[in-house]
Length: 229
Length: 242
Image 1 (tube, chains in turn red, orange):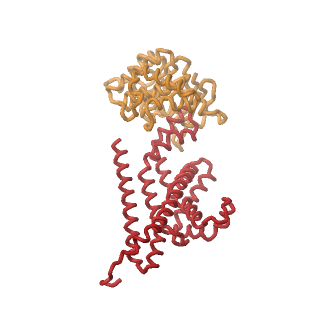
Image 2: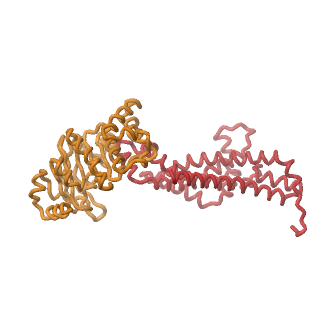
Image 3: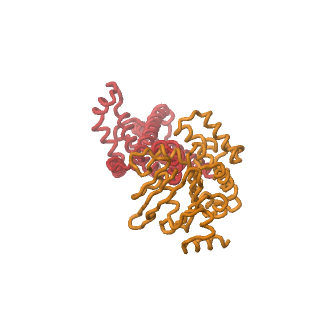
């Protein structure tokens, strides 16, 4: 880019419908991965505390494996290797966009490893005496976990879970490796088509910033409110 | 009601409990005292299986606690326990603290459980606090709720693990009053406590522990008037000085 570069933003207004569609895909992947990641991450966190060695080792191995490989690579594996298998496994109709499904699955499995660690710390943050009190009332371990420990753990964890969700949203831009038209991918394509890559990428960056910064302010406000309560 | 027979427990090479034997009969109030680190809290937690032990046996209401075939949650639902730090569930209201285990463990319907909860709150003088959360109550109030929560399960006996140690002095009596009333109604109670005034007024027997052993197990008056062991004499002298 030379010093005399003349910005031309004119290709953005016309591209807004495509960009909005792309944002829809980004948010869809984020939403699915956050929900699935928290559910599966909770299971992993509980399995890791299991007295059965096989279960606790298995969960630990899963978490350590996914935390030790780059996300792009996981996405590529799922994009390249798993689609045929997946289509058969989930019984999807032939016309389904496997890129979207494999991206959702890849993100969910990857993020659950990170959520598992957050949730494990959240469970540990609930005082040990609470487990003793629940047990003393005759609750079984699963009941005590569900009725007493997890509700408190999740309350403590909300800011961290939100922060992880924001990181996840940013990371969805990595689906460009499978040419999926998420928000970032769409911005790139439009910019490339019109020869206005700089403008489109600056615009996309601004949108990511506004959304992520806004969400992190929300997380902080929530944290302040619960600390006062 | 509670029969503890030759119980021993180790953390590695450190013996927490050595060869402890004691009984608490139905309707009896037994106070367990001794210097800190003497194993009294560990012993009372062994009684409902919150702490495992390696040797000996404990039988509560005819059920052996150490037996691996014993359904411990079921046994615990019949044994009330009150903790030093109250351990109310902070995410639930006072009423929900009282009804949760009634509904989920005993299978009572919600209305019956609430009725029971209301009556017990009335009894410990906290009926007006039913809708509040634990953090909004004073320590003494929280401990009274904790006692009511345990009573809501209709326990066959009650275990108290230093119920007043975490309280400010002016709140100790409101908790001791509830416990005294309970004792007078004939509840079987095992209390780990430093409150010698309570022991003197309410207890039938006193167990004195030191370094993981039961050193004395005497009728109340015998213990306070003529403690046999030098350790118990020292302990009483120190604790009654102030």
